Image 1 (cartoon, one colour):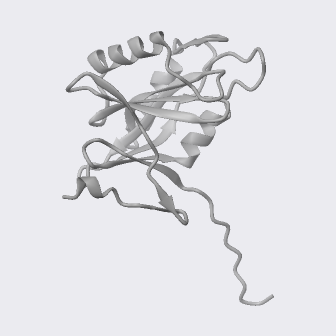
Image 2: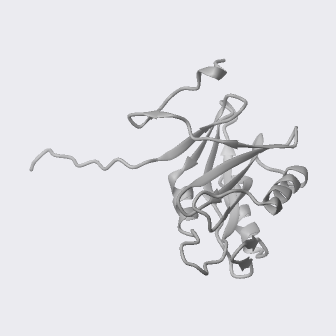
Image 3: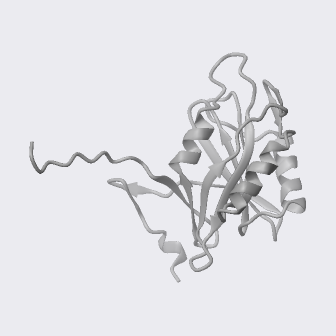
Length: 181
């Protein structure tokens, strides 16, 4: 058929509102990569990595665009994962040259809807105190079997809170009217 163009629409990102009225976009590429590491099998170990992205200097909005994935020397068990392989840092430096910076961590849980463990919360507090992230917030994502959840760490106030995807109508995100500028 002459003149017909087929277009496939795909989800480009998930959008979350931040407490400061700005937004964070979790790009579908990064989310799909994390989902590939779900603990779907009974004996699958936890997986983990860094979240990489950037904060727009003009708008203050944040984009999580890339992740690092499990490397050979990482420590993994059914209920624990620790980044041990220096390849994560090499990949992080490579992305810095493309203006994508370390902004948090992700890992998996063998739960349908993941809940952070006491160990997770302690490690997130430590990240907020010791790590330098390339955005106003540190991000923490847990990938479960049926859902994923996202938390932020406010490094200035040392507070962790969950954030939620923005409401959509017909595939279009609604504007958060509580934070008009």
